[in-house]
Length: 277
Image (cartoon, rainbow, N blue to C red):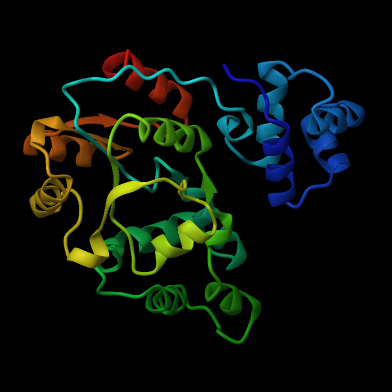
């Protein structure tokens, strides 16, 4: 396993609005040790201690780890690679948790509204502002009180990049043309880029559902993406966190693999072993 990244530890602690003393108390890691870890003065702690820090911050273990060396061997059967965004490059569910807490409503209720309106958002038939107003209406929020005000704020600040996937994508761009394919609402991708939630890379193409009126797992989405890649279906590798989307891509003729956003290091290791070693 890659070691703890001092800069990542500091970034995640600050994102959680924790002081070093507060994190030390929550995690059980000595304050003096924590300060030295953030400065990179002492070696990485044990896996258990690193996991305790992640639990105390409320982030994934992988968010605190430095990038492990990636050795890619070119696979002649692959001519193009598509990455999904949410669940592969970005942790988005924590933002729903944080949003639900801010508006003082159960997480399951808020998540249900997301899924009920996913198609309208992804196909560009509903704006982000429209959705927030719908949430306020459905959950009976008073727009003049704190919960109502919070309902209209962005949840993007609570999303986190899946850094191992970012590093993996960047390495693959040295060997293959790489594209993005996502079920995504209007305006989100531009915000993702600005917040560095997606890696800065030379993408061959970016397929956004809101631009084309189709979404995964619809056949048309894969057809449009294949045409944009300009290679045969069988030469495309697709990485997604949805098994439904993975199966749909396979039916279309793509090579496709499921990605576990909660264990990205394992998923990347498996991808390398299967395709790039």
